[in-house]
Length: 122
Image 1 (cartoon, rainbow, N blue to C red):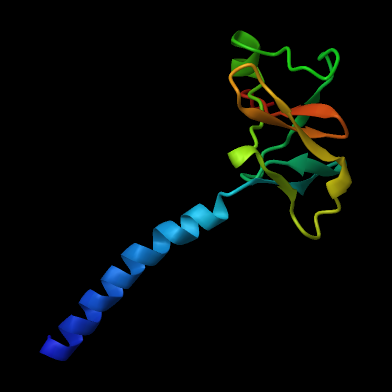
Image 2 (cartoon, rainbow, N blue to C red; image 1 turned 135 degrees about the horizontal axis):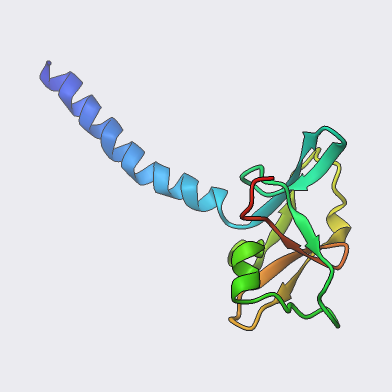
C-alpha cells in the first residue's frame, strides 16, 4: 500500500470512528412509535418492530405494573423522556404522550393508555 493510500485509509477510519457514535446518538434521542401489518391490519409497533399493547388496568393515569408484571409486560420507555411518531405510519402524534414511573423514567402512552410490549411470543 502506498504512503498516500495508507494516510487516506487512516483518515477514513478516524473520521468513521468520530462520526458513527454521533449518528447513533442522533438516532436514539427519542422513542419513535410506528406501525406494522399483521393478519388483521396495522398495529402500533415499537422502534424494533414489536407489537405494542395498551395496559388498561392503570388507575388515575398512574402506572401500576411493576416487578413481575413489568417483566411479563415491559413498559415502552421514552428515551430521554421524548416520544415521536414515525412519519407516514398513520399514527396521530396528538395522541402520543408519556407518564412518569416511580423510578423517574417516562413510559409512552397512546390515547392516554400506557404502552407495553410482551415477553411471550404467541
